[in-house]
Length: 332
Image 1: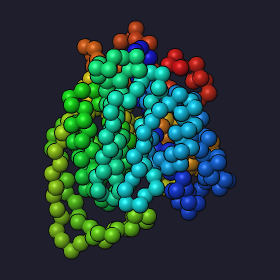
Image 2: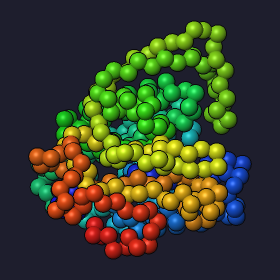
Image 3: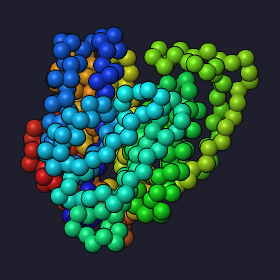
Image 4: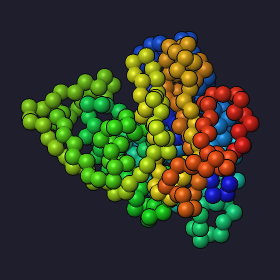
Protein backbone atom coordinates (compact mmCIF):
# COMPACT_ATOMS: atom_id res chain seq x y z
CA UNK A 1 0.00 0.00 0.00
CA UNK A 2 0.96 3.63 -0.43
CA UNK A 3 2.00 5.68 2.63
CA UNK A 4 -1.64 6.73 3.14
CA UNK A 5 -3.01 3.21 2.65
CA UNK A 6 -3.11 0.53 5.32
CA UNK A 7 -4.27 -3.06 5.54
CA UNK A 8 -6.43 -3.64 8.62
CA UNK A 9 -7.36 -7.12 9.81
CA UNK A 10 -9.97 -8.11 12.39
CA UNK A 11 -10.09 -11.62 13.83
CA UNK A 12 -11.75 -13.43 16.69
CA UNK A 13 -8.92 -15.87 17.35
CA UNK A 14 -10.98 -18.11 19.71
CA UNK A 15 -9.72 -17.89 23.26
CA UNK A 16 -8.16 -21.08 24.50
CA UNK A 17 -10.32 -20.88 27.62
CA UNK A 18 -13.36 -21.53 25.38
CA UNK A 19 -12.04 -24.56 23.48
CA UNK A 20 -13.84 -27.19 25.53
CA UNK A 21 -14.51 -30.28 23.45
CA UNK A 22 -18.25 -30.20 24.23
CA UNK A 23 -18.45 -26.79 22.53
CA UNK A 24 -16.90 -28.22 19.36
CA UNK A 25 -18.08 -31.83 19.06
CA UNK A 26 -17.21 -32.10 15.36
CA UNK A 27 -13.54 -31.20 15.72
CA UNK A 28 -11.39 -34.22 15.01
CA UNK A 29 -8.77 -34.92 16.15
CA UNK A 30 -9.39 -33.21 19.47
CA UNK A 31 -5.72 -32.30 19.54
CA UNK A 32 -6.62 -29.57 17.03
CA UNK A 33 -8.13 -27.66 19.96
CA UNK A 34 -4.92 -27.66 21.99
CA UNK A 35 -2.98 -24.43 22.27
CA UNK A 36 0.28 -26.04 21.20
CA UNK A 37 -1.38 -26.49 17.78
CA UNK A 38 -3.59 -23.41 17.67
CA UNK A 39 -1.20 -20.80 19.07
CA UNK A 40 1.50 -21.17 16.40
CA UNK A 41 -1.18 -21.48 13.69
CA UNK A 42 -2.80 -18.20 14.74
CA UNK A 43 0.54 -16.40 14.72
CA UNK A 44 1.41 -17.95 11.35
CA UNK A 45 -1.84 -16.71 9.80
CA UNK A 46 -1.24 -13.16 11.01
CA UNK A 47 2.28 -13.33 9.61
CA UNK A 48 1.05 -14.75 6.31
CA UNK A 49 -1.57 -12.08 5.75
CA UNK A 50 0.85 -9.46 7.15
CA UNK A 51 -1.69 -6.72 7.95
CA UNK A 52 -0.37 -3.32 8.94
CA UNK A 53 -2.89 -3.27 11.81
CA UNK A 54 -4.61 -6.25 13.41
CA UNK A 55 -7.51 -6.11 15.87
CA UNK A 56 -8.04 -9.35 17.79
CA UNK A 57 -10.89 -10.56 19.97
CA UNK A 58 -11.01 -13.43 22.47
CA UNK A 59 -7.35 -12.84 23.24
CA UNK A 60 -5.90 -14.92 26.05
CA UNK A 61 -2.32 -16.22 26.21
CA UNK A 62 -1.28 -12.61 25.64
CA UNK A 63 2.32 -13.19 26.74
CA UNK A 64 2.71 -15.74 23.95
CA UNK A 65 0.89 -13.64 21.34
CA UNK A 66 2.70 -10.39 22.10
CA UNK A 67 6.09 -12.14 22.19
CA UNK A 68 5.62 -14.07 18.94
CA UNK A 69 4.08 -11.17 17.04
CA UNK A 70 6.63 -8.82 18.61
CA UNK A 71 9.35 -10.93 17.02
CA UNK A 72 7.47 -10.56 13.73
CA UNK A 73 7.61 -6.76 13.93
CA UNK A 74 4.42 -5.86 15.78
CA UNK A 75 3.77 -3.76 18.86
CA UNK A 76 0.40 -3.91 20.58
CA UNK A 77 -1.86 -3.33 23.57
CA UNK A 78 -4.54 -5.50 25.14
CA UNK A 79 -7.59 -4.90 27.33
CA UNK A 80 -8.91 -7.82 29.36
CA UNK A 81 -12.62 -8.38 29.88
CA UNK A 82 -14.05 -7.65 33.29
CA UNK A 83 -16.11 -9.87 35.56
CA UNK A 84 -13.47 -12.56 35.91
CA UNK A 85 -13.38 -13.47 32.23
CA UNK A 86 -9.99 -14.59 30.97
CA UNK A 87 -10.00 -13.21 27.42
CA UNK A 88 -9.98 -9.71 26.00
CA UNK A 89 -9.34 -7.59 22.93
CA UNK A 90 -6.07 -6.33 21.45
CA UNK A 91 -4.75 -4.07 18.70
CA UNK A 92 -1.31 -4.56 17.16
CA UNK A 93 0.53 -2.62 14.46
CA UNK A 94 3.72 -2.91 12.43
CA UNK A 95 6.27 -0.86 14.30
CA UNK A 96 8.21 -0.09 11.12
CA UNK A 97 5.15 1.70 9.71
CA UNK A 98 3.20 3.00 12.69
CA UNK A 99 3.61 4.07 16.28
CA UNK A 100 1.17 4.51 19.14
CA UNK A 101 0.19 8.10 19.88
CA UNK A 102 -2.37 7.34 22.61
CA UNK A 103 -4.79 4.65 23.73
CA UNK A 104 -7.90 4.37 25.86
CA UNK A 105 -9.72 1.43 27.42
CA UNK A 106 -13.49 1.01 27.50
CA UNK A 107 -15.47 -0.97 30.07
CA UNK A 108 -19.18 -1.34 29.35
CA UNK A 109 -20.09 -2.93 32.71
CA UNK A 110 -22.35 -5.26 30.70
CA UNK A 111 -21.45 -8.97 30.66
CA UNK A 112 -17.77 -8.13 31.02
CA UNK A 113 -17.72 -6.34 27.67
CA UNK A 114 -14.77 -4.07 26.87
CA UNK A 115 -13.33 -2.05 24.03
CA UNK A 116 -9.94 -0.68 23.08
CA UNK A 117 -9.19 2.58 21.27
CA UNK A 118 -5.76 3.36 19.79
CA UNK A 119 -4.54 6.37 17.87
CA UNK A 120 -1.79 5.45 15.44
CA UNK A 121 0.48 7.73 13.46
CA UNK A 122 3.13 7.08 10.80
CA UNK A 123 6.38 6.01 12.42
CA UNK A 124 8.28 8.55 10.33
CA UNK A 125 5.94 11.47 11.05
CA UNK A 126 6.74 14.45 13.23
CA UNK A 127 5.10 14.34 16.65
CA UNK A 128 2.25 16.63 15.63
CA UNK A 129 -0.49 14.06 15.02
CA UNK A 130 -0.28 14.45 11.25
CA UNK A 131 -1.60 11.44 9.35
CA UNK A 132 -2.95 9.81 12.50
CA UNK A 133 -6.05 7.63 12.64
CA UNK A 134 -7.97 5.68 15.25
CA UNK A 135 -8.63 1.95 15.39
CA UNK A 136 -11.34 0.77 17.78
CA UNK A 137 -12.21 -2.82 18.57
CA UNK A 138 -14.74 -4.59 20.74
CA UNK A 139 -16.43 -7.96 21.22
CA UNK A 140 -20.16 -7.73 21.86
CA UNK A 141 -22.20 -10.18 23.93
CA UNK A 142 -23.08 -13.33 22.04
CA UNK A 143 -26.62 -14.31 23.07
CA UNK A 144 -29.12 -13.67 20.21
CA UNK A 145 -31.99 -13.52 22.70
CA UNK A 146 -30.42 -10.49 24.38
CA UNK A 147 -29.76 -8.11 21.50
CA UNK A 148 -30.64 -5.21 23.76
CA UNK A 149 -27.45 -5.87 25.71
CA UNK A 150 -25.42 -5.84 22.50
CA UNK A 151 -27.02 -2.52 21.57
CA UNK A 152 -26.13 -1.02 24.95
CA UNK A 153 -22.56 -2.21 24.60
CA UNK A 154 -22.31 -0.99 21.00
CA UNK A 155 -23.78 2.44 21.74
CA UNK A 156 -21.29 3.00 24.56
CA UNK A 157 -18.31 1.84 22.49
CA UNK A 158 -19.38 3.95 19.51
CA UNK A 159 -19.81 7.02 21.70
CA UNK A 160 -16.39 6.56 23.27
CA UNK A 161 -14.79 5.91 19.88
CA UNK A 162 -16.38 9.04 18.38
CA UNK A 163 -15.10 11.19 21.25
CA UNK A 164 -11.63 9.67 21.03
CA UNK A 165 -11.44 10.14 17.24
CA UNK A 166 -12.43 13.82 17.58
CA UNK A 167 -13.87 13.92 14.06
CA UNK A 168 -10.85 12.26 12.48
CA UNK A 169 -10.45 8.96 10.61
CA UNK A 170 -11.75 5.92 12.48
CA UNK A 171 -11.81 2.19 11.80
CA UNK A 172 -14.31 0.46 14.12
CA UNK A 173 -14.00 -3.31 14.01
CA UNK A 174 -14.73 -6.42 15.99
CA UNK A 175 -16.81 -9.48 16.54
CA UNK A 176 -20.14 -7.72 16.92
CA UNK A 177 -22.04 -11.01 17.22
CA UNK A 178 -24.59 -9.39 14.93
CA UNK A 179 -25.66 -10.08 11.36
CA UNK A 180 -26.17 -7.54 8.56
CA UNK A 181 -29.72 -6.24 8.88
CA UNK A 182 -29.70 -6.44 12.68
CA UNK A 183 -30.46 -3.48 14.92
CA UNK A 184 -26.81 -3.42 16.01
CA UNK A 185 -25.61 -2.92 12.42
CA UNK A 186 -28.38 -0.39 11.86
CA UNK A 187 -27.07 1.56 14.85
CA UNK A 188 -23.54 1.51 13.44
CA UNK A 189 -24.34 2.20 9.80
CA UNK A 190 -27.69 3.94 9.63
CA UNK A 191 -26.86 7.24 11.26
CA UNK A 192 -30.39 7.38 12.70
CA UNK A 193 -31.89 6.41 16.03
CA UNK A 194 -32.81 2.74 16.47
CA UNK A 195 -35.98 1.83 18.35
CA UNK A 196 -35.50 -1.71 19.63
CA UNK A 197 -38.42 -3.76 20.91
CA UNK A 198 -37.49 -6.63 23.20
CA UNK A 199 -38.82 -9.03 25.79
CA UNK A 200 -37.33 -8.28 29.23
CA UNK A 201 -35.36 -11.21 30.58
CA UNK A 202 -34.58 -12.14 34.16
CA UNK A 203 -31.05 -11.48 35.36
CA UNK A 204 -28.77 -14.47 35.67
CA UNK A 205 -29.34 -15.96 32.20
CA UNK A 206 -27.24 -19.00 31.42
CA UNK A 207 -24.28 -17.61 29.46
CA UNK A 208 -23.15 -21.06 28.34
CA UNK A 209 -26.40 -22.54 27.05
CA UNK A 210 -28.05 -19.24 26.17
CA UNK A 211 -31.20 -20.23 28.04
CA UNK A 212 -33.11 -17.16 29.26
CA UNK A 213 -36.25 -16.81 31.33
CA UNK A 214 -38.63 -14.02 30.21
CA UNK A 215 -40.01 -11.72 32.87
CA UNK A 216 -43.75 -11.50 33.40
CA UNK A 217 -43.84 -8.11 31.71
CA UNK A 218 -45.00 -6.69 28.37
CA UNK A 219 -42.47 -6.03 25.57
CA UNK A 220 -40.27 -3.01 26.19
CA UNK A 221 -38.86 -0.42 23.80
CA UNK A 222 -35.46 1.22 24.08
CA UNK A 223 -34.07 3.88 21.76
CA UNK A 224 -30.40 4.03 20.82
CA UNK A 225 -28.72 7.10 19.33
CA UNK A 226 -25.77 6.71 16.94
CA UNK A 227 -22.91 9.12 17.75
CA UNK A 228 -21.45 8.74 14.23
CA UNK A 229 -22.20 7.10 10.91
CA UNK A 230 -20.08 4.28 9.56
CA UNK A 231 -20.03 2.15 6.42
CA UNK A 232 -18.77 -1.39 5.92
CA UNK A 233 -15.49 -2.12 4.19
CA UNK A 234 -17.22 -5.18 2.69
CA UNK A 235 -19.88 -4.47 0.05
CA UNK A 236 -21.75 -6.75 0.03
CA UNK A 237 -20.91 -8.33 3.39
CA UNK A 238 -19.57 -11.89 3.37
CA UNK A 239 -22.14 -14.67 3.55
CA UNK A 240 -20.33 -15.92 6.64
CA UNK A 241 -17.34 -15.15 8.82
CA UNK A 242 -17.99 -18.13 11.07
CA UNK A 243 -19.16 -21.57 10.01
CA UNK A 244 -19.65 -24.40 12.47
CA UNK A 245 -21.91 -27.43 12.59
CA UNK A 246 -24.53 -25.36 14.46
CA UNK A 247 -24.21 -21.82 13.02
CA UNK A 248 -23.32 -19.98 9.82
CA UNK A 249 -23.29 -16.21 9.63
CA UNK A 250 -21.46 -12.90 9.22
CA UNK A 251 -20.60 -11.65 12.71
CA UNK A 252 -17.26 -9.92 12.17
CA UNK A 253 -17.12 -6.43 10.72
CA UNK A 254 -14.76 -3.64 9.65
CA UNK A 255 -16.64 -0.33 9.70
CA UNK A 256 -15.28 2.99 8.46
CA UNK A 257 -15.85 6.71 8.74
CA UNK A 258 -16.17 8.80 5.58
CA UNK A 259 -12.42 9.51 5.60
CA UNK A 260 -11.61 6.06 4.20
CA UNK A 261 -11.87 4.44 0.79
CA UNK A 262 -11.79 0.63 0.63
CA UNK A 263 -9.47 -0.69 -2.06
CA UNK A 264 -9.63 -4.45 -1.49
CA UNK A 265 -11.03 -7.03 0.91
CA UNK A 266 -10.08 -10.56 1.87
CA UNK A 267 -12.32 -13.42 0.74
CA UNK A 268 -13.56 -15.96 3.25
CA UNK A 269 -12.39 -19.57 3.30
CA UNK A 270 -14.22 -21.64 0.71
CA UNK A 271 -17.15 -23.45 2.30
CA UNK A 272 -16.12 -26.78 0.79
CA UNK A 273 -12.72 -26.52 2.46
CA UNK A 274 -14.37 -25.98 5.83
CA UNK A 275 -16.95 -28.73 5.42
CA UNK A 276 -14.22 -31.20 4.51
CA UNK A 277 -13.65 -31.27 8.27
CA UNK A 278 -17.31 -30.49 9.12
CA UNK A 279 -16.75 -27.27 11.03
CA UNK A 280 -14.47 -24.53 12.28
CA UNK A 281 -12.10 -24.79 14.04
CA UNK A 282 -10.27 -27.73 12.50
CA UNK A 283 -6.85 -29.21 12.06
CA UNK A 284 -6.26 -26.69 9.25
CA UNK A 285 -8.00 -23.58 10.60
CA UNK A 286 -7.29 -22.58 14.23
CA UNK A 287 -10.38 -20.50 15.06
CA UNK A 288 -14.15 -20.77 14.71
CA UNK A 289 -14.04 -17.34 13.02
CA UNK A 290 -12.27 -16.28 9.84
CA UNK A 291 -10.23 -13.09 9.62
CA UNK A 292 -11.72 -10.16 7.79
CA UNK A 293 -9.23 -7.77 6.19
CA UNK A 294 -9.46 -4.60 4.15
CA UNK A 295 -6.93 -2.40 2.39
CA UNK A 296 -7.93 1.18 3.13
CA UNK A 297 -6.87 4.48 1.61
CA UNK A 298 -6.89 7.55 3.82
CA UNK A 299 -8.01 10.90 2.47
CA UNK A 300 -8.54 12.17 -1.07
CA UNK A 301 -11.56 13.32 -3.02
CA UNK A 302 -13.01 9.81 -3.19
CA UNK A 303 -12.78 9.10 0.54
CA UNK A 304 -15.90 7.39 1.81
CA UNK A 305 -16.49 5.55 -1.46
CA UNK A 306 -15.31 2.21 -2.73
CA UNK A 307 -12.54 2.23 -5.32
CA UNK A 308 -13.80 1.84 -8.88
CA UNK A 309 -10.92 3.28 -10.90
CA UNK A 310 -9.58 0.47 -13.07
CA UNK A 311 -6.14 2.09 -13.03
CA UNK A 312 -5.90 1.69 -9.25
CA UNK A 313 -3.83 -1.43 -8.57
CA UNK A 314 -6.18 -2.38 -5.72
CA UNK A 315 -9.52 -1.73 -7.41
CA UNK A 316 -12.04 -4.56 -7.62
CA UNK A 317 -9.60 -7.11 -6.26
CA UNK A 318 -10.06 -9.58 -3.46
CA UNK A 319 -7.77 -12.09 -1.83
CA UNK A 320 -8.44 -15.68 -0.87
CA UNK A 321 -7.87 -16.53 2.76
CA UNK A 322 -5.55 -19.46 3.49
CA UNK A 323 -4.39 -19.48 -0.14
CA UNK A 324 -0.65 -20.04 -0.41
CA UNK A 325 -0.69 -18.33 -3.80
CA UNK A 326 -1.17 -15.03 -1.96
CA UNK A 327 2.42 -15.09 -0.69
CA UNK A 328 3.18 -12.71 -3.58
CA UNK A 329 0.54 -10.14 -2.65
CA UNK A 330 1.83 -6.64 -3.49
CA UNK A 331 1.31 -5.35 0.07
CA UNK A 332 4.09 -7.60 1.38
